[in-house]
Length: 396
Image 1 (cartoon, one colour):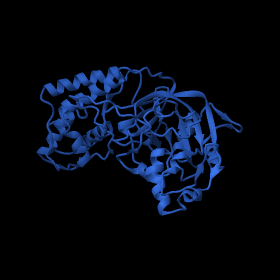
Image 2 (cartoon, rainbow, N blue to C red):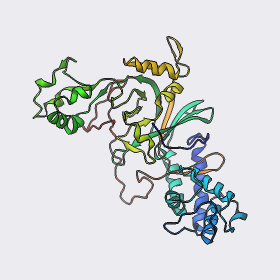
Image 3 (tube, one colour):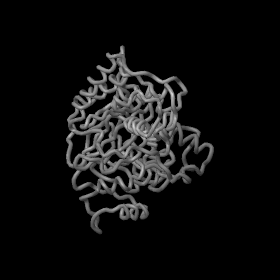
């Protein structure tokens, strides 16, 4: 299954110096804005290698102001190899496909005002200001606006994974905790809200639905209940536990990454792998789905041995093929941070931007309370928490 192309930059999105680096960048962009900002290109502009004319000169001036192109190359009117490289650098900093040509998405990013970029950097730095994250030799970073997961070793990104983050109306929260276990072949407990909105209507239309989806009904004693004994014209099914068996169609996929936190969110596989191919990957109810999650699990399990020795990707896949639930506790938990950085700078001064998918950067005249983030705790190797307001969401 194809996945979206993401940056292979080895510099981490988050390291100990990110806050101060991002603040320095914010000051730089403030000065650019105060000096009049940068020129914009007309709507519908398309520019590529070999093109000539005044719009090429405008593009050069625009890229020179952010340092993607040397100042002494800002007046040429030819789209040459040097300009192609500069456009690729700009695209890499914005998480865009590095085509070297200016089309719709690159044009949109080019035309974001310098003052907006300053605000993104300032807001991102403010979100980091209270961080107490414990950086170690090995840690994991999810930058929510990037929809990507970074496995970091000794200050470098060892592996980066395409991810799916929360929808705008069910956003992924910022979290600082530790990965404690890998759950292979997890079960999934259906939340009450989904029993009402999804399961009951499906069973009314198709009495065999639960069997097809491998969902069992359990009573308070954990005994299995025959679906035919329930009155599906009512909502009595909410009084039972509905649990989906492990397997390829399980809503959590075949691997779940356990990371205890107050929001009860986690990382996991998904049967809907086609979503990993999209550029905009915000489809979950708060949890983060990870492409090639077996590779990620192998990295997390380094130093944690199975009965056969070190865990390998082949060993993980063999365990998955066994179809039985297995919870593997990490010998050494791995720190993990989910952050919301729409603007950030790396130690070498390179400044990166991502779309503000949740609208958190804009100054709010009447601040609204942060929404209750309640993705399903479902099937951890820790005991699920009860949600105080009773609201529950699906992890799918």
